[in-house]
Length: 498
Image 1 (spheres, rainbow, N blue to C red):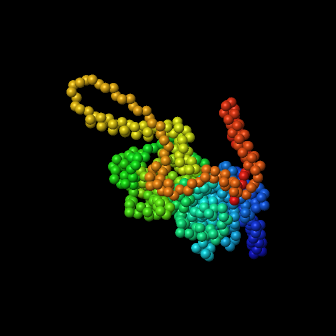
Image 2 (cartoon, helix red, strand yellow):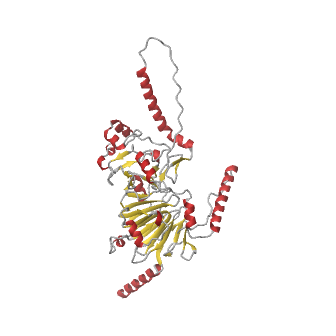
Image 3 (cartoon, helix red, strand yellow):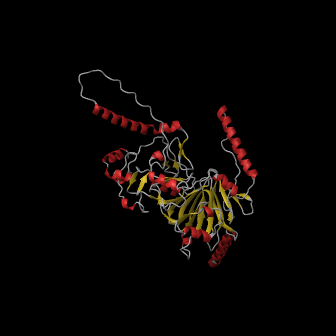
Protein backbone atom coordinates (compact mmCIF):
# COMPACT_ATOMS: atom_id res chain seq x y z
CA UNK A 1 0.00 0.00 0.00
CA UNK A 2 2.83 2.38 0.92
CA UNK A 3 4.73 1.54 -2.26
CA UNK A 4 1.74 2.54 -4.41
CA UNK A 5 1.49 5.88 -2.64
CA UNK A 6 5.14 6.63 -3.29
CA UNK A 7 4.70 5.90 -7.01
CA UNK A 8 1.69 8.21 -7.27
CA UNK A 9 3.56 11.08 -5.57
CA UNK A 10 6.57 10.65 -7.83
CA UNK A 11 4.42 10.75 -10.98
CA UNK A 12 2.63 13.88 -9.75
CA UNK A 13 5.96 15.64 -9.13
CA UNK A 14 7.18 14.87 -12.66
CA UNK A 15 3.97 16.23 -14.19
CA UNK A 16 4.24 19.45 -12.14
CA UNK A 17 7.83 20.02 -13.27
CA UNK A 18 6.90 19.59 -16.91
CA UNK A 19 4.04 22.08 -16.57
CA UNK A 20 6.20 24.72 -14.89
CA UNK A 21 9.04 24.41 -17.39
CA UNK A 22 7.30 23.54 -20.62
CA UNK A 23 9.47 23.30 -23.72
CA UNK A 24 9.02 26.98 -24.61
CA UNK A 25 9.47 28.23 -21.02
CA UNK A 26 12.89 28.57 -19.41
CA UNK A 27 12.28 30.58 -16.23
CA UNK A 28 9.73 30.85 -13.46
CA UNK A 29 8.93 33.91 -11.32
CA UNK A 30 9.44 32.83 -7.71
CA UNK A 31 9.38 36.22 -5.94
CA UNK A 32 8.49 39.73 -7.05
CA UNK A 33 7.67 43.09 -5.55
CA UNK A 34 6.21 46.25 -7.02
CA UNK A 35 5.54 46.56 -10.74
CA UNK A 36 7.20 44.24 -13.23
CA UNK A 37 6.28 43.84 -16.89
CA UNK A 38 7.36 41.45 -19.61
CA UNK A 39 7.40 41.92 -23.34
CA UNK A 40 7.12 38.58 -25.14
CA UNK A 41 8.47 37.58 -28.54
CA UNK A 42 5.11 38.26 -30.21
CA UNK A 43 5.24 41.89 -29.04
CA UNK A 44 2.60 41.55 -26.32
CA UNK A 45 3.26 43.22 -22.95
CA UNK A 46 1.98 41.52 -19.78
CA UNK A 47 2.07 42.18 -16.05
CA UNK A 48 4.40 39.69 -14.40
CA UNK A 49 2.99 37.64 -11.54
CA UNK A 50 4.42 35.17 -9.04
CA UNK A 51 4.61 31.56 -10.37
CA UNK A 52 4.42 32.81 -13.95
CA UNK A 53 6.60 31.02 -16.52
CA UNK A 54 8.65 32.95 -19.07
CA UNK A 55 9.96 31.82 -22.47
CA UNK A 56 13.15 32.58 -24.36
CA UNK A 57 13.03 36.00 -25.99
CA UNK A 58 11.15 37.64 -23.10
CA UNK A 59 12.17 41.13 -21.99
CA UNK A 60 11.59 42.00 -18.33
CA UNK A 61 11.46 45.48 -16.88
CA UNK A 62 11.06 46.59 -13.27
CA UNK A 63 9.78 49.92 -11.95
CA UNK A 64 11.15 51.96 -9.08
CA UNK A 65 11.26 50.05 -5.76
CA UNK A 66 10.47 46.83 -7.64
CA UNK A 67 12.34 43.60 -8.33
CA UNK A 68 11.76 40.09 -9.65
CA UNK A 69 13.51 36.82 -8.83
CA UNK A 70 13.65 34.12 -11.50
CA UNK A 71 14.37 30.41 -11.23
CA UNK A 72 15.79 28.97 -14.46
CA UNK A 73 15.57 25.44 -15.78
CA UNK A 74 19.12 24.71 -14.53
CA UNK A 75 18.02 25.77 -11.00
CA UNK A 76 20.08 28.96 -11.19
CA UNK A 77 18.51 32.07 -9.66
CA UNK A 78 18.60 35.65 -10.89
CA UNK A 79 17.35 38.90 -9.34
CA UNK A 80 16.53 41.85 -11.57
CA UNK A 81 16.85 44.98 -9.42
CA UNK A 82 14.82 48.21 -9.39
CA UNK A 83 14.58 50.31 -12.57
CA UNK A 84 16.24 47.54 -14.55
CA UNK A 85 15.68 45.72 -17.82
CA UNK A 86 16.96 42.39 -19.11
CA UNK A 87 16.39 40.06 -22.05
CA UNK A 88 16.41 36.26 -21.93
CA UNK A 89 18.08 35.83 -25.31
CA UNK A 90 18.57 32.08 -25.08
CA UNK A 91 18.52 29.37 -22.44
CA UNK A 92 18.90 25.94 -24.10
CA UNK A 93 19.19 22.84 -21.96
CA UNK A 94 22.48 21.65 -23.46
CA UNK A 95 24.23 24.97 -24.03
CA UNK A 96 25.06 28.04 -21.98
CA UNK A 97 22.28 30.58 -21.58
CA UNK A 98 22.58 34.19 -22.78
CA UNK A 99 21.15 37.12 -20.83
CA UNK A 100 21.37 40.77 -21.90
CA UNK A 101 21.28 43.47 -19.24
CA UNK A 102 19.87 46.55 -20.98
CA UNK A 103 20.04 48.77 -17.90
CA UNK A 104 20.19 48.54 -14.14
CA UNK A 105 21.30 45.59 -12.03
CA UNK A 106 21.36 41.80 -12.09
CA UNK A 107 22.31 39.63 -9.10
CA UNK A 108 22.65 35.93 -9.84
CA UNK A 109 23.49 32.71 -8.06
CA UNK A 110 24.48 29.91 -10.44
CA UNK A 111 24.04 26.43 -9.00
CA UNK A 112 27.16 24.39 -8.29
CA UNK A 113 25.68 21.40 -10.11
CA UNK A 114 25.40 23.56 -13.21
CA UNK A 115 28.99 24.69 -12.80
CA UNK A 116 30.09 21.05 -12.79
CA UNK A 117 29.05 20.38 -16.38
CA UNK A 118 31.27 18.15 -18.51
CA UNK A 119 33.19 20.91 -20.32
CA UNK A 120 34.72 22.96 -17.49
CA UNK A 121 36.70 25.11 -19.90
CA UNK A 122 33.63 26.90 -21.22
CA UNK A 123 31.34 29.38 -19.53
CA UNK A 124 28.05 28.01 -18.18
CA UNK A 125 26.12 31.26 -18.59
CA UNK A 126 26.76 34.50 -20.47
CA UNK A 127 25.60 37.92 -19.38
CA UNK A 128 26.27 40.78 -21.73
CA UNK A 129 25.69 44.51 -21.97
CA UNK A 130 26.36 46.81 -24.90
CA UNK A 131 30.02 47.15 -23.93
CA UNK A 132 30.96 43.99 -22.00
CA UNK A 133 30.55 40.23 -21.89
CA UNK A 134 30.79 38.02 -18.84
CA UNK A 135 31.34 34.27 -18.83
CA UNK A 136 29.98 32.83 -15.62
CA UNK A 137 32.27 30.31 -13.97
CA UNK A 138 31.36 31.26 -10.42
CA UNK A 139 28.34 31.10 -8.22
CA UNK A 140 27.40 34.55 -6.85
CA UNK A 141 27.93 37.84 -8.68
CA UNK A 142 26.38 41.19 -9.56
CA UNK A 143 26.38 43.18 -12.81
CA UNK A 144 25.43 46.86 -13.21
CA UNK A 145 25.04 48.73 -16.49
CA UNK A 146 24.29 52.38 -17.29
CA UNK A 147 23.14 52.90 -20.91
CA UNK A 148 23.83 56.64 -20.73
CA UNK A 149 27.61 56.32 -20.41
CA UNK A 150 27.70 52.62 -21.42
CA UNK A 151 29.67 51.65 -18.31
CA UNK A 152 29.51 48.06 -17.03
CA UNK A 153 30.64 46.89 -13.56
CA UNK A 154 31.02 43.32 -12.28
CA UNK A 155 31.33 42.36 -8.61
CA UNK A 156 31.99 38.74 -7.60
CA UNK A 157 30.89 37.55 -4.16
CA UNK A 158 31.78 33.88 -4.61
CA UNK A 159 33.55 31.84 -7.29
CA UNK A 160 34.89 33.52 -10.43
CA UNK A 161 33.57 35.29 -13.52
CA UNK A 162 35.44 36.08 -16.75
CA UNK A 163 34.95 39.58 -18.16
CA UNK A 164 36.03 41.37 -21.33
CA UNK A 165 35.00 44.42 -23.31
CA UNK A 166 32.99 44.10 -26.52
CA UNK A 167 34.72 46.06 -29.26
CA UNK A 168 33.00 49.00 -30.92
CA UNK A 169 32.67 47.05 -34.18
CA UNK A 170 30.71 44.25 -32.47
CA UNK A 171 28.41 46.18 -30.13
CA UNK A 172 25.42 46.06 -32.46
CA UNK A 173 26.01 42.45 -33.48
CA UNK A 174 23.95 39.51 -32.24
CA UNK A 175 26.51 37.42 -30.34
CA UNK A 176 25.86 33.68 -29.96
CA UNK A 177 27.52 31.30 -27.47
CA UNK A 178 30.55 30.71 -29.68
CA UNK A 179 31.30 34.40 -30.24
CA UNK A 180 30.74 35.23 -26.59
CA UNK A 181 33.12 32.48 -25.51
CA UNK A 182 35.81 33.93 -27.77
CA UNK A 183 35.32 37.34 -26.16
CA UNK A 184 35.60 36.11 -22.55
CA UNK A 185 38.51 33.79 -23.42
CA UNK A 186 40.58 36.41 -25.27
CA UNK A 187 43.92 37.70 -24.04
CA UNK A 188 42.19 40.93 -22.96
CA UNK A 189 39.73 39.14 -20.68
CA UNK A 190 40.14 39.25 -16.91
CA UNK A 191 39.03 36.83 -14.19
CA UNK A 192 37.12 38.45 -11.32
CA UNK A 193 37.25 36.44 -8.09
CA UNK A 194 35.68 36.75 -4.64
CA UNK A 195 35.65 40.27 -3.23
CA UNK A 196 36.85 41.88 -6.47
CA UNK A 197 35.41 44.34 -8.95
CA UNK A 198 36.15 44.92 -12.62
CA UNK A 199 34.54 47.28 -15.07
CA UNK A 200 34.40 48.45 -18.64
CA UNK A 201 34.37 52.17 -17.86
CA UNK A 202 34.57 54.22 -21.02
CA UNK A 203 35.40 57.31 -18.94
CA UNK A 204 38.73 55.62 -18.19
CA UNK A 205 39.58 53.18 -21.00
CA UNK A 206 38.14 50.79 -23.58
CA UNK A 207 39.21 47.46 -22.09
CA UNK A 208 38.09 45.77 -18.89
CA UNK A 209 39.95 46.85 -15.77
CA UNK A 210 42.29 44.39 -14.08
CA UNK A 211 40.26 43.22 -11.04
CA UNK A 212 40.86 45.02 -7.76
CA UNK A 213 39.49 44.62 -4.25
CA UNK A 214 36.25 46.49 -3.63
CA UNK A 215 36.07 48.58 -0.45
CA UNK A 216 35.40 46.30 2.53
CA UNK A 217 32.31 48.13 3.79
CA UNK A 218 30.70 48.12 0.34
CA UNK A 219 31.36 44.47 -0.54
CA UNK A 220 29.89 43.32 2.80
CA UNK A 221 26.79 45.50 2.45
CA UNK A 222 26.13 44.59 -1.19
CA UNK A 223 26.45 40.88 -0.48
CA UNK A 224 23.57 41.19 1.97
CA UNK A 225 21.42 43.27 -0.40
CA UNK A 226 20.48 40.69 -3.04
CA UNK A 227 17.35 42.40 -4.34
CA UNK A 228 18.70 45.95 -4.33
CA UNK A 229 15.65 47.05 -2.32
CA UNK A 230 17.15 47.01 1.16
CA UNK A 231 16.46 50.30 2.92
CA UNK A 232 19.06 52.35 4.71
CA UNK A 233 19.18 52.27 8.50
CA UNK A 234 22.11 54.68 8.69
CA UNK A 235 21.74 58.10 10.22
CA UNK A 236 22.82 60.82 7.84
CA UNK A 237 25.58 63.22 8.84
CA UNK A 238 26.74 66.28 6.98
CA UNK A 239 30.13 66.31 8.73
CA UNK A 240 33.02 65.57 6.44
CA UNK A 241 36.11 64.11 8.09
CA UNK A 242 39.49 65.44 7.05
CA UNK A 243 42.04 63.00 5.68
CA UNK A 244 44.87 62.97 8.27
CA UNK A 245 47.48 62.59 5.53
CA UNK A 246 48.62 65.89 3.97
CA UNK A 247 47.46 66.63 0.40
CA UNK A 248 49.91 65.27 -2.17
CA UNK A 249 51.55 62.87 0.26
CA UNK A 250 51.81 59.16 -0.53
CA UNK A 251 49.41 57.43 1.83
CA UNK A 252 51.40 54.20 2.01
CA UNK A 253 54.79 55.81 2.52
CA UNK A 254 53.45 58.42 4.92
CA UNK A 255 51.74 55.78 7.02
CA UNK A 256 55.00 53.86 7.36
CA UNK A 257 57.19 56.70 8.60
CA UNK A 258 55.22 59.52 10.18
CA UNK A 259 54.65 59.70 13.92
CA UNK A 260 52.47 62.74 13.23
CA UNK A 261 50.26 60.50 11.13
CA UNK A 262 49.99 58.03 14.02
CA UNK A 263 48.82 60.76 16.37
CA UNK A 264 46.28 62.15 13.91
CA UNK A 265 44.80 58.73 13.20
CA UNK A 266 44.64 57.89 16.90
CA UNK A 267 42.57 61.03 17.46
CA UNK A 268 40.00 59.61 15.02
CA UNK A 269 39.81 56.35 16.97
CA UNK A 270 41.51 54.31 14.25
CA UNK A 271 43.92 51.50 15.07
CA UNK A 272 47.34 52.83 14.06
CA UNK A 273 48.79 49.37 13.53
CA UNK A 274 46.08 48.54 11.02
CA UNK A 275 47.17 51.56 8.99
CA UNK A 276 50.70 50.34 8.35
CA UNK A 277 51.00 48.90 4.83
CA UNK A 278 53.76 46.63 3.59
CA UNK A 279 54.01 47.46 -0.10
CA UNK A 280 56.80 46.38 -2.42
CA UNK A 281 57.42 49.36 -4.68
CA UNK A 282 59.19 47.17 -7.24
CA UNK A 283 55.87 45.53 -8.17
CA UNK A 284 54.23 48.71 -9.42
CA UNK A 285 52.74 46.87 -12.41
CA UNK A 286 51.84 43.67 -10.56
CA UNK A 287 48.18 42.75 -10.45
CA UNK A 288 48.64 41.91 -6.75
CA UNK A 289 49.82 45.40 -5.85
CA UNK A 290 47.12 47.26 -3.87
CA UNK A 291 48.24 50.59 -5.33
CA UNK A 292 47.16 49.66 -8.87
CA UNK A 293 48.86 50.64 -12.11
CA UNK A 294 48.28 52.25 -15.53
CA UNK A 295 49.90 51.00 -18.72
CA UNK A 296 49.43 53.71 -21.32
CA UNK A 297 50.94 51.56 -24.07
CA UNK A 298 48.56 48.59 -23.71
CA UNK A 299 45.57 50.34 -22.12
CA UNK A 300 45.73 47.88 -19.23
CA UNK A 301 44.99 49.37 -15.84
CA UNK A 302 44.02 48.59 -12.28
CA UNK A 303 42.58 51.02 -9.75
CA UNK A 304 43.85 50.87 -6.15
CA UNK A 305 42.43 48.27 -3.77
CA UNK A 306 39.58 49.73 -1.74
CA UNK A 307 37.97 51.56 -4.66
CA UNK A 308 34.21 51.97 -4.39
CA UNK A 309 31.52 51.99 -7.08
CA UNK A 310 28.50 54.20 -7.63
CA UNK A 311 25.88 51.72 -8.81
CA UNK A 312 23.76 54.46 -10.38
CA UNK A 313 26.34 55.97 -12.74
CA UNK A 314 28.51 52.82 -12.71
CA UNK A 315 31.61 54.92 -12.08
CA UNK A 316 34.38 53.71 -9.78
CA UNK A 317 35.86 56.11 -7.23
CA UNK A 318 39.51 55.28 -6.44
CA UNK A 319 41.24 56.23 -3.18
CA UNK A 320 43.53 59.27 -3.60
CA UNK A 321 47.29 58.92 -3.23
CA UNK A 322 47.15 60.08 0.39
CA UNK A 323 44.45 57.59 1.44
CA UNK A 324 44.90 55.61 4.66
CA UNK A 325 45.95 51.97 4.09
CA UNK A 326 44.41 49.13 6.12
CA UNK A 327 46.88 46.26 6.33
CA UNK A 328 44.25 43.85 7.62
CA UNK A 329 42.08 44.10 4.51
CA UNK A 330 44.85 45.10 2.12
CA UNK A 331 42.81 48.10 0.94
CA UNK A 332 43.03 51.87 0.99
CA UNK A 333 40.14 53.86 2.46
CA UNK A 334 38.32 56.39 0.30
CA UNK A 335 37.96 59.54 2.45
CA UNK A 336 34.48 60.98 2.93
CA UNK A 337 35.45 64.06 0.91
CA UNK A 338 34.88 61.73 -2.05
CA UNK A 339 31.63 60.28 -0.67
CA UNK A 340 30.70 57.38 1.55
CA UNK A 341 29.02 53.97 1.51
CA UNK A 342 25.71 53.22 3.19
CA UNK A 343 26.59 50.33 5.50
CA UNK A 344 23.07 48.87 5.19
CA UNK A 345 22.51 48.97 1.43
CA UNK A 346 26.01 49.28 -0.02
CA UNK A 347 24.92 52.31 -2.05
CA UNK A 348 27.34 55.13 -2.72
CA UNK A 349 26.42 58.59 -1.40
CA UNK A 350 28.15 61.62 -2.89
CA UNK A 351 29.43 64.33 -0.51
CA UNK A 352 26.74 66.72 0.77
CA UNK A 353 25.95 69.32 -1.89
CA UNK A 354 27.59 67.34 -4.70
CA UNK A 355 26.46 64.80 -7.30
CA UNK A 356 28.56 62.35 -9.28
CA UNK A 357 27.84 62.71 -12.99
CA UNK A 358 27.81 59.93 -15.56
CA UNK A 359 31.08 61.41 -16.87
CA UNK A 360 32.78 60.53 -13.59
CA UNK A 361 33.11 64.12 -12.38
CA UNK A 362 31.62 65.70 -9.26
CA UNK A 363 29.17 68.56 -9.81
CA UNK A 364 27.98 71.14 -7.27
CA UNK A 365 24.19 70.94 -6.86
CA UNK A 366 23.93 72.89 -3.59
CA UNK A 367 26.87 75.25 -3.05
CA UNK A 368 25.69 76.42 0.38
CA UNK A 369 25.25 72.87 1.71
CA UNK A 370 28.60 71.78 0.33
CA UNK A 371 30.34 74.85 1.81
CA UNK A 372 28.73 74.22 5.20
CA UNK A 373 29.59 70.49 5.24
CA UNK A 374 33.21 71.19 4.36
CA UNK A 375 33.51 74.17 6.75
CA UNK A 376 34.99 72.29 9.76
CA UNK A 377 37.81 70.78 7.70
CA UNK A 378 38.41 74.03 5.81
CA UNK A 379 38.47 76.02 9.04
CA UNK A 380 40.91 73.57 10.60
CA UNK A 381 43.21 73.94 7.62
CA UNK A 382 43.00 77.74 7.85
CA UNK A 383 43.81 77.60 11.58
CA UNK A 384 46.86 75.47 10.87
CA UNK A 385 47.97 77.92 8.19
CA UNK A 386 47.42 80.92 10.47
CA UNK A 387 49.50 79.28 13.19
CA UNK A 388 52.30 78.63 10.73
CA UNK A 389 52.14 82.19 9.43
CA UNK A 390 52.19 83.58 12.97
CA UNK A 391 55.17 81.46 13.90
CA UNK A 392 57.06 82.63 10.81
CA UNK A 393 56.17 86.25 11.60
CA UNK A 394 57.34 85.86 15.21
CA UNK A 395 60.60 84.36 14.02
CA UNK A 396 61.17 87.36 11.76
CA UNK A 397 60.23 90.00 14.43
CA UNK A 398 63.34 91.69 15.93
CA UNK A 399 63.85 91.94 19.67
CA UNK A 400 61.88 94.69 21.45
CA UNK A 401 63.55 98.15 21.64
CA UNK A 402 61.14 99.58 24.14
CA UNK A 403 58.80 101.06 21.53
CA UNK A 404 55.23 100.39 22.67
CA UNK A 405 53.63 101.37 19.37
CA UNK A 406 51.32 98.58 18.19
CA UNK A 407 50.17 97.72 14.74
CA UNK A 408 46.65 96.45 14.12
CA UNK A 409 46.54 92.81 13.16
CA UNK A 410 45.46 92.16 9.58
CA UNK A 411 41.84 91.06 9.16
CA UNK A 412 41.45 87.33 8.52
CA UNK A 413 41.01 86.43 4.88
CA UNK A 414 37.50 85.38 3.90
CA UNK A 415 36.93 81.67 3.40
CA UNK A 416 37.55 80.80 -0.24
CA UNK A 417 34.83 79.11 -2.26
CA UNK A 418 35.36 75.37 -2.22
CA UNK A 419 35.68 73.56 -5.51
CA UNK A 420 34.33 70.00 -5.78
CA UNK A 421 36.95 67.24 -5.56
CA UNK A 422 38.18 65.57 -8.72
CA UNK A 423 38.73 61.82 -8.75
CA UNK A 424 41.58 62.19 -11.20
CA UNK A 425 43.29 65.07 -9.36
CA UNK A 426 44.07 62.69 -6.50
CA UNK A 427 46.02 60.48 -8.89
CA UNK A 428 48.03 62.40 -11.52
CA UNK A 429 49.12 59.17 -13.20
CA UNK A 430 45.46 58.24 -13.68
CA UNK A 431 44.66 61.63 -15.20
CA UNK A 432 47.39 61.12 -17.80
CA UNK A 433 46.20 57.58 -18.50
CA UNK A 434 42.59 58.69 -18.96
CA UNK A 435 43.61 61.44 -21.36
CA UNK A 436 45.24 58.80 -23.57
CA UNK A 437 42.85 55.86 -23.25
CA UNK A 438 39.34 57.11 -22.46
CA UNK A 439 36.65 56.64 -25.09
CA UNK A 440 34.44 59.60 -25.87
CA UNK A 441 30.80 58.62 -25.31
CA UNK A 442 28.24 60.79 -27.13
CA UNK A 443 26.14 62.92 -24.80
CA UNK A 444 23.02 61.54 -26.46
CA UNK A 445 24.02 57.93 -25.81
CA UNK A 446 20.64 57.08 -24.33
CA UNK A 447 18.83 58.54 -27.33
CA UNK A 448 21.06 56.48 -29.60
CA UNK A 449 20.11 53.31 -27.75
CA UNK A 450 16.43 54.12 -28.09
CA UNK A 451 16.83 55.01 -31.77
CA UNK A 452 18.54 51.72 -32.60
CA UNK A 453 16.07 49.59 -30.64
CA UNK A 454 13.01 47.87 -32.09
CA UNK A 455 10.17 50.36 -32.46
CA UNK A 456 7.56 49.99 -29.73
CA UNK A 457 5.59 52.97 -30.92
CA UNK A 458 5.99 56.71 -30.75
CA UNK A 459 2.67 56.94 -28.96
CA UNK A 460 4.01 55.32 -25.79
CA UNK A 461 7.02 57.63 -25.80
CA UNK A 462 4.76 60.66 -26.22
CA UNK A 463 2.49 59.52 -23.39
CA UNK A 464 5.46 59.12 -21.07
CA UNK A 465 6.93 62.51 -22.01
CA UNK A 466 3.58 64.28 -21.64
CA UNK A 467 2.95 62.65 -18.28
CA UNK A 468 6.36 63.73 -17.01
CA UNK A 469 5.70 67.32 -18.09
CA UNK A 470 2.29 67.32 -16.37
CA UNK A 471 3.82 65.99 -13.17
CA UNK A 472 6.48 68.71 -13.17
CA UNK A 473 3.81 71.39 -13.74
CA UNK A 474 1.75 70.04 -10.82
CA UNK A 475 4.78 70.03 -8.55
CA UNK A 476 5.71 73.58 -9.54
CA UNK A 477 2.16 74.78 -8.97
CA UNK A 478 2.06 73.14 -5.56
CA UNK A 479 5.36 74.74 -4.64
CA UNK A 480 4.10 78.20 -5.57
CA UNK A 481 0.68 77.92 -3.90
CA UNK A 482 1.63 75.78 -0.94
CA UNK A 483 -0.83 73.08 -1.99
CA UNK A 484 -0.04 69.37 -1.95
CA UNK A 485 0.43 67.63 -5.28
CA UNK A 486 0.94 64.03 -6.26
CA UNK A 487 4.62 63.13 -6.36
CA UNK A 488 4.15 59.91 -8.25
CA UNK A 489 2.54 59.14 -11.55
CA UNK A 490 1.96 56.06 -13.61
CA UNK A 491 4.25 56.23 -16.61
CA UNK A 492 3.90 53.40 -19.06
CA UNK A 493 6.85 51.08 -19.50
CA UNK A 494 8.89 51.67 -22.62
CA UNK A 495 10.82 48.60 -23.70
CA UNK A 496 13.97 49.67 -25.49
CA UNK A 497 15.82 46.35 -25.46
CA UNK A 498 17.71 45.30 -28.53
